[in-house]
Length: 192
Image (tube, rainbow, N blue to C red; front, side, top):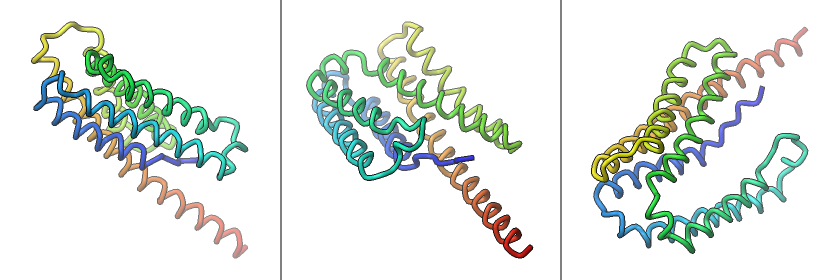
């Protein structure tokens, strides 16, 4: 079983969440135009790097590998955000809550992997995925006052960042554990 977790993407996303949560809490919505223009350019560059990396790896040999498509998606999304930041600024809590919902849904997969591996920590991982997912859906669907929505939104981003950090650290430990077991199994089979 492949336990590859793209740690750097989760880490960058989590750091972005924390920074943005603080900025969102302190800065009025109208002052975000420059922030989103810069963020859009960064996302587009990450997409270009992912597209270039696709051509240097043999990931195309894997049937469920979509790194090229995700790279194109990042470039397109980044360009949209960079060129139309006013559309994003008017709707950023809803847009980023959608990202949190997607992110949390993907973390549910990690918890189910742990469940299938019979690891007790699957419950903690499931809770850390489900709570931000539900809070994100509530933010998207339930009308809220502007002030309450900003506080709620900042809390949601920080909670999701914490969940991402936990996932990175825990999965890194699980991967090492399985690598050690796999290595030990190879050694045992060589001795026989």
